[in-house]
Length: 156
Image (tube, rainbow, N blue to C red; front, top):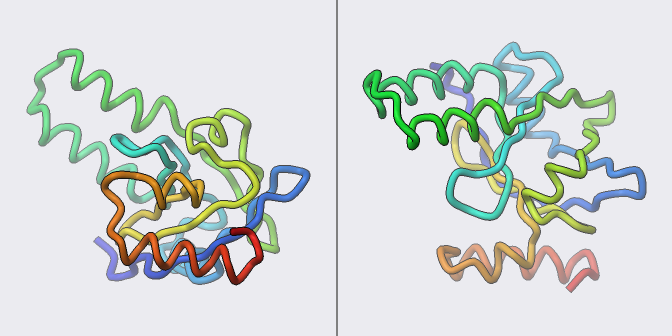
């Protein structure tokens, strides 16, 4: 396992061509891990947002799948595998760090004009900022952080 983890947050706009800039510090982690200029994006297992990670995390997901279900093939295993691998997209980013977010992923993540990036160790989440503020599991300090970022961009 690598010692490089995602840290921090960012609020970025989605442009008219559905491009979204990945925070520079996140791109640095992906590239230090040796995965080139691509990330994998999929719906979060429990929250109304997206998760994104480097290709190396796919290996860890497969290991997690095997440990969690211990070769037990049932509906819960199939659902986890489909969400983790089948409902994901490998998306390259350009020289400016932008990805093109598909309509399906925007729908899964409820992404509209803005996307809030929130690091979570070996992956990061991409949220509709208002959804994150209103989500029942959101810590009040995180909600405050999101509100301040929206205010700073004049998007509140």
